[in-house]
Length: 288
Image (cartoon, rainbow, N blue to C red):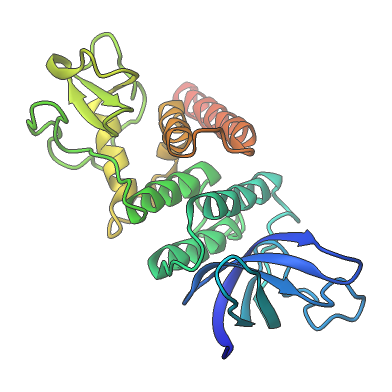
């Protein structure tokens, strides 16, 4: 069979023998592949640096028949993922992205939009905190997860009630609006139904299983993070760290995979710490 050339993100590297490794890649043109890299573990391997986890590389591989490993013949490093020099949280976020891609994509199913989203997200995670374009880890992940769900055909219903189809959300949230009290289970008019992956009004929420209390503001924020053309999330990143959003996304992935993701506890912890820091900063600003 003829070889194929493509940009690829390295998702996982597993030792196969003393000299070889099995590499799981998300390629731009062929989707996810698992390929044998012969000699990859040798000290002077031609693959050196190009098959590190989350590296972006130009690869050449030979596809094999279904059920067999492809053969990786060449890999040239384009960009290495290196946030760990200054942020452990961003390193965990990158590994979390790789876990999502590995668990929720099918072999040899091209997903160019998801590939482009993943490349951009890894770039955002490497942006230094002193840079003008800096965004918080929780906001970057929330944006990525909302867009990934949509691109995989599991986008959340955030405009109409899943029961009566009544429109629920008014005008778009202003960037300067406050973001506290996003979950209002007792007094709120909205709920998010995990079974329907959609909003439901108070009149339609009975008998729909697990519900998450929502406010109109929470739904508006999620719409911004899900909209591929709306960049408002970049200018007000504290939106992304609210616990109600982390609970919602964790439940979505759990429902689709039927098991928790391995890095869920780490992501919940870093999001919690980020939210606490932001709350403390707001309290201090009010006192001053």
